[in-house]
Image (cartoon, rainbow, N blue to C red; front, side, top):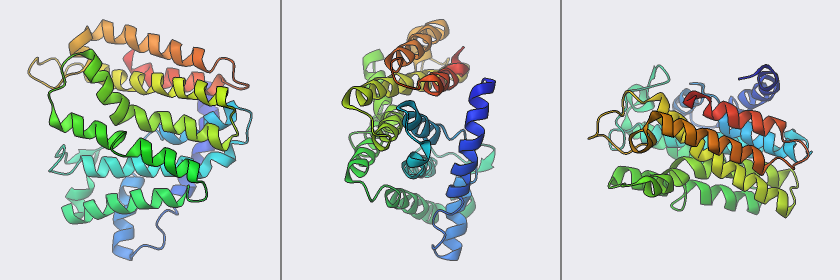
Amino acid sequence: MNDALAAWSRGRLIEVEAALAEVCADAEPGLREALRYPIQTGGKRIRPLLCLAAAESVAADGAAALQPALALELVHTYSLVHDDLPAMDDDNERRGRPTVHVVFGEATAILVGDALLTAAFEHVADSPTLVRELARAAGGAGMVGGQYLDIRGNVDGIDALKHLHRLKTGALLRASVRMGGIVGGASAAELQALTLYGEAVGLAFQIADDVLDADEVADEAGPPSYVRLLGVQGARTEARRLVEEAAAAVGQLPRPQVLVALAEFVAARAF
C-alpha cells in the first residue's frame, strides 16, 4: 500500500472499526460474544474502503457511505463464517485464529452467519435501492450463486472460471463501488464507470489470490484456477490488464485517485 493510500485508509478504517464494534450490541450476551469474534479477526476491509472511495470519487462526502460500507463488511463476514463450516470448506483456522465453529460449535456458527447477514440489512434499510443492490450481490445471482458453482465443481475453461468468480467474489466488490456511488449521488454515466471498475477489480482480486497460492494449486488434479489455466506469468499479465482497465474506467470521475490506488493494492499480490 503506497503512503498516500495508507494515509487515506487509516482515518477511514478508524471509523469503520468503531462502527463494527457496535454491531449487534443488543444481541443475547452469549451470542453477542460469538458475533463479535469473526468481526474482530481483522482483514483488509477492502469492501468498506471501496464503498467509501467510490462515494468520494464522485466528489461526495465519504461519511454518507459509512452505513452501506458496514453492510458490505457484515455480508462478507457472514459468508466467511458459513464457508468455513464442515459442510462447506471445512476450515479450522482463518487469519491465524480458530474459526467460529471450532470455538463456538457448528450450530452457533450457523446462527452467527444468519445474524450478521440480517444485521447487514439494518444498515441500508432506509434505502430500497441499496437493499436491492446488496441483496442481488449477496444472493443466488451473486455471491451465493458463485459459491454454489464452486462447491458443485465441474468448472472447465477460463470463461466458466471467470463467471464463477464474477459471482462468488466479484459481485460484492462490484456492489461496493456501486453502493458508494449511489449514496454519493453518482450520475448514470458515473455509476456505469464504477460498475466497470468493480467488475475489473473483482477479477483482479481473485487472480491475485490464485497467484499468491500458486504453490498450492500446482497439482493438476486440484480445483481450477487462473494460474492452472494461464500459468503464473499469464495470470500476472491478466491481473495487470484488469488493473489498467479499472483505472481507465474511472479516469474521468472527479476524484478517481483513491480508487486507482485501491485497484493496484487489490492486485499487488499478483506482481
